[in-house]
Image 1 (cartoon, rainbow, N blue to C red):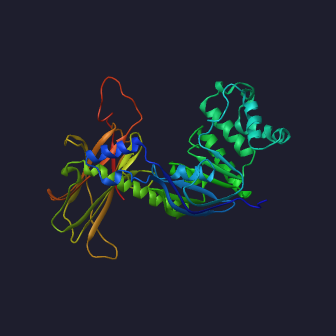
Image 2 (cartoon, rainbow, N blue to C red):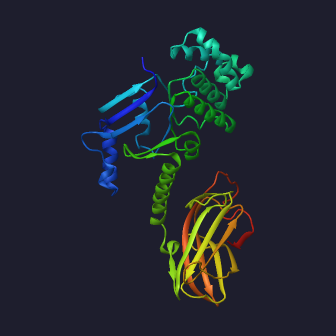
Amino acid sequence: MHNEPSIQLKSVSKTYPVTFRDFAVGVFRALAGQSAGSSFPASGRAALDAVTADIRAGERVGIIGPNGAGKSTLVHIIAGLAEPTGGVVEVAGRVTAVMTLGLGLREDLSGRENIYIDGELQGKTRAEVDRVIGQIIDFAELSDFINMPVRTYSTGMKARLAFAMISCIEPEILVIDEALSAGDAFFAVKARQKIQELCSTGRIVIVVSHDIDSIRRICDRCLWMDSGRIVMDGDPVTITGCYSDHVRAQDESLLLARLPGSAKEVFLAGGIEALDLSIHYSSEREARRVVESGKDVLFSIAARAGRAVVQPSVRVALLRLDGTLLMESRRDIAFGPLAGASGFGFETAAELSPLRLNRGTYVCRVELVETGNLVAARSAAFEVTSTETFRGGYPQLLWPYIVHSERI
């Protein structure tokens, strides 16, 4: 009998045999001129490659990474749903795996009947389930619906019931693969609190998710996986920050690769040493290349010169990729002496509150003018996403708005 749950992974590998579909995809990619690395070796497709990690009692571990990184394969092996092809897996404690909240519910049975059946599957007696069923029903907030068939439940109701069942019966090791995205915001808060409560009693919780904010709020440890390997292992804020930077750099590289030269132009002259432009939401300072329409977006600008600049002004313009001007803002600025260094500089920002561009790719162009002459310019491409659906046309600029610009 073990005392505390634990998981030890020693050089764990998992290789899937190559199927005809894998082979066909590899041939197609080769014919399309993609890298040879896109094809699979004859020995098979490696989902995990010598993964080593120790997870101890009370840890809340988040696993992040792109699709195909090996995250789900790893938790399937931990849960005993798949066998490794190499290495050693030592799991002390009973594992409860939730791959999709509500997926295992029996639709024709009531919520109450599902609770008893799930308890039996977890090895609980009816008396043991009786002791917690009131707690489960209260947590799920189903009231009279608990005696109705699950097929009559909404997606959020099913999610609340499923999570209440697995958490209130207290698993020793809980594995959640992309399941916390179900349910409403209030339920998500309750789920996080319950996970922290479980871990405070020595349980282990492993969460696989693309939701970086959830990983930061829920977990005290994070694994970043890519190509079947652990890239980084550490505190969630540091690891998710590095991962976000990596993804953003990849997205920016792909975006810039398909843009014309004018969309990524940098021009400096007349003693201007730098003109920087960053795009981010007003509520944060993390630079972005993809922003959502309807949110407050800030275009931050900074310049540095080795000399004083006479009567400078800055122009901020948004354009389509074909060069069509959508809007612009002009204002005079003041170059102030740089503290602790020779030369002059300034910082300013233009805020679109909110950004009301339709989805697509745009260019922000910043120009620095001295006594009427252009002395510096920088262009940066960014992508706008939108959840709105338009009818009767496809407007580019959704409605007029005011651009606020001030020195910072």
